[in-house]
Image (cartoon, rainbow, N blue to C red; front, top):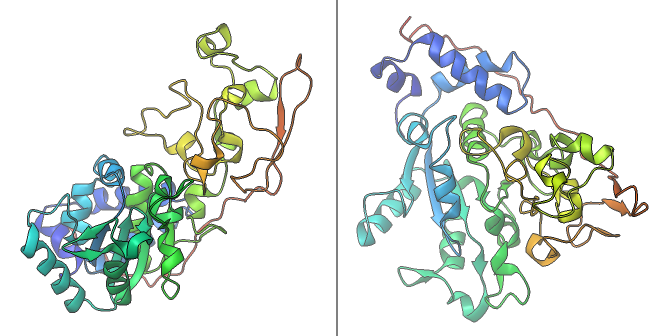
Length: 359
């Protein structure tokens, strides 16, 4: 294991004020109470950089591409300051035998302590032959790596729920991480791909508290997935007024009206896109004029009808939403039942001094 994080911060000349500001921002993003910022700073300063092993399976590298664009914290900040990324095929310099040797060494030296990240689904068809690394199936590699992991993060919808590879007719027999691993704590961070700062935020939470954040009934962090996109969408007032764009280039679309009738799945999709946004908080799909595809929900691809309004019931998104069509002249109103209230991850911490940081 590496030395305390505080040693790395001091070497880089990070000031106490800068570090506290960073922790306060991170706590706010994760819906933690205001006092959590200092607690996070204390815990992170005293903690050691945990070993992280990232296994890519049946995926498109979109999750890796997304996390490299995280801005708070940045991926380079995570790798060099907060964690020890001991295996990640796309980002590591080693390849072939040296790469696999690094993975086995990290698993052996940090048995029971390392954090395992998985992106991509795991194919079971043909005894796992659809996806292999170094002549070994994804199934075997996952089970081996999971044995010594302290916790597992399923990164992206493919790892969380099977994603697009699992869509009908699922020719490779793709399954999610939780379909195979039953004896380890698992957090799902769905999205195709997930929001960058959601991924790094969960990693920072684990580093700070040594545990996974509060999760909803689908294994997602409540801080980011506790409410639907519809709940926080800036187009919501137009929805409530019954003002809907009919085409992507009509007057309603140009005026920013609700995209529900064009197939937006925001009312049945739990994610933080509307508040956290993408590309450093610049924008997100609905702000760019395209309806939500519902990619952070199980079986979103099989739900289909991306340009067709939700109907009754809203299955197969399976979120308990009920939709009712009200008069063609007044538009469509959707009542969402059983909303998941946004959780607030809370934890108690011992106070650790930050005086070792440069004033």
